[in-house]
Length: 177
Image 1 (cartoon, rainbow, N blue to C red):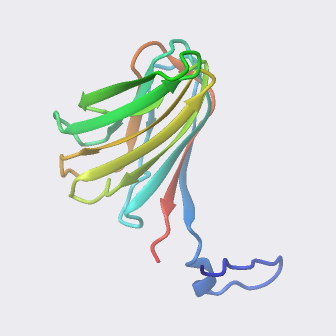
Image 2: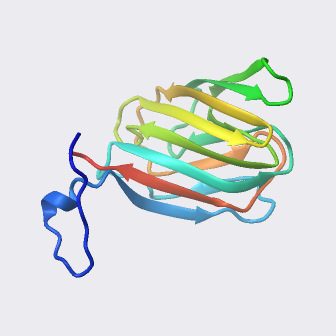
Image 3: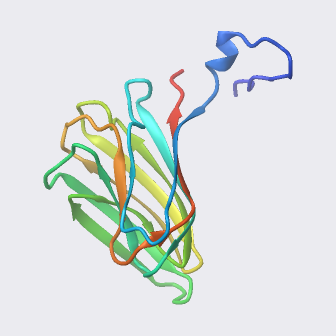
């Protein structure tokens, strides 16, 4: 395993140490109150091939799921499967799949968090997704793709039903090593 860089206050850092950093924050958006969607613009670029989208501390008015749609990627080009487990129905798994014009991000509860890895959103290539999430009601993990080869610079999160409030959406670029 490579040795992580050791940063010390007041010490000059060389490029080789900085280039070993794994995630770089590229955007952060605070979710408003009772919104029907949240757009994160200008977070994808040629600087990174893969990104991590982190959702924290968001509440939903309906227990349902959040949809993610890439900017510029129109048409019926998404496919995904989002299996989830309901804590109150022990041993029972459910799923949301399909998508057409979006990908499933996280199954919502009253308060939710989740992370999604997105690969090649800026490239004119198929975009791959892998997502995990949890709330006080559900836990989920799933994935999918968008076969539309249009370059995207951002995305929109939309609840399948109801509204969402509060929390943050932070986007990180995976360092190229």
